[in-house]
Amino acid sequence: MKNFKLLALLVLLVGTVNAQTSQNPWLVSVGVNAVGLQGDLTGSNPLLKSDYKSMSFGVPSLSVFRSIYGGFSIGAQFSLNSLKSETSVSDTSFSSIEGALKYGFSRDSKVSPFLKAGFGRTSFGVGDEDEFNEARNATDTYFGSAGLNFKVGDRLSLFVESSYRSTQDAPKGSYLQHTFGVAFGLGSGDTDKDGVSDKKDKCPDVPGLKEFEGCPDTDADGIPDDQDNCPEEAGPEENNGCPDTDGDGVLDKDDACVDVAGLAELNGCPDSDEDGVIDSEDECPQEAGETENNGCPWPDQDNDGIADKDDACPDEAGTTEGNGCPDTSKEVLSEMNSVGSNILFPANGFKLMGKKTLDAIKEVKRILDENPTASILIEGHASTDGGEKINQEISLKRAESVKAKLIELGVDESRLEVKAFGESMPVLGEDSIETRSKSRRVEFKSKS
Image 1 (spheres, helix red, strand yellow):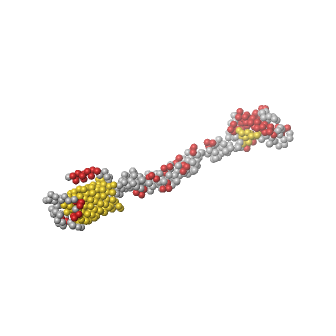
Image 2 (cartoon, helix red, strand yellow):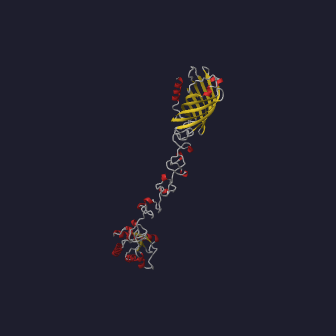
Image 3 (cartoon, helix red, strand yellow):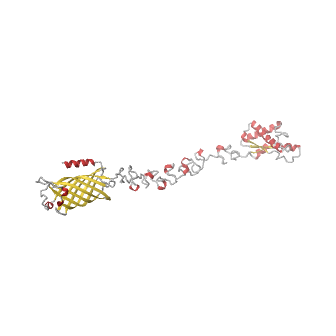
């Protein structure tokens, strides 16, 4: 009874230790053994009784094994028992100690079978004699056994084992021994249960792969998660594990157009017409346009290259200088200059002289009103009287005085421009008072 209490205590003590696995290479077991002697063994020595019970139970059975390769392990085991007689009060003590080679099948499974073979010494003692020193009844023993492990927790398994044993010296014969109990493993453990021991596991708290030293590869791209910039999306090593679906050099995580090759500066989106507006936002993806107009070119009804929004004459082709309006026709300019010949100035002045001059300017205004797209350049001139510098200044003021009067009469200032030529362009044959008077003039040209 005392022995069984001891066994129960040992079971409680090891209840939190796991069974032998590749992460826990040391296997320690404790259990109960049952010995059944065969007839030829009991008859080979007069000290052994012939009326032993068919099966005698005893404790403890102890073993220690160390995994060496694959399912193989080596170890030692020890058993004590007391062979019970049917008639006698005295029992025969029994002890055995052996070395063994063990092979386990499917050690990580819930139920795993195993085989053992080994060699050792078995001792039979009589009465109160010391069972460990009963040399005359000690014999070499060979044995073979088979058993099952039952995994009941991360750190515990139960086992049953039956062995056939053959003694080589007197008492010579054979006997059966059956053992059952608990087994527990010792080692570094495997916290995340990924098959890589914590000692070798670089990611001991996360299940992983042996080829990555216990670290996971969630997207199965061959790059462990701790080195993968995109651990949940498969990608090549050159992209640090990130995918580039459209192969445009912009990783999917940074690509606004994942399935269509595009430009890095546009976040991976294409711009077919190269106008800076991505195709998905471009209302005219095949025609270069303006961002402000959703990627479309501004309309130009007169096809003069000036957008209607900037064209002062959107229905009539013109020039850039004329804000989209055509140059003032030669006929109109000729009419203006014919009228303008009546605009007179004093010899050294720029004031407009007399009613004839004012009427001429009014006539120029009328011509401009009839040609609303016309824009003119008012050129100021001077005679050779006086100095060149003074004449340059006077010619400018003459053009400005005509411009001011036209603005006063209602002509838009944007249609008028002035330029001074001084005495550089006199009327031919300026050798008389009359021709010098004609040189003090303004002329009208197309504004360009």
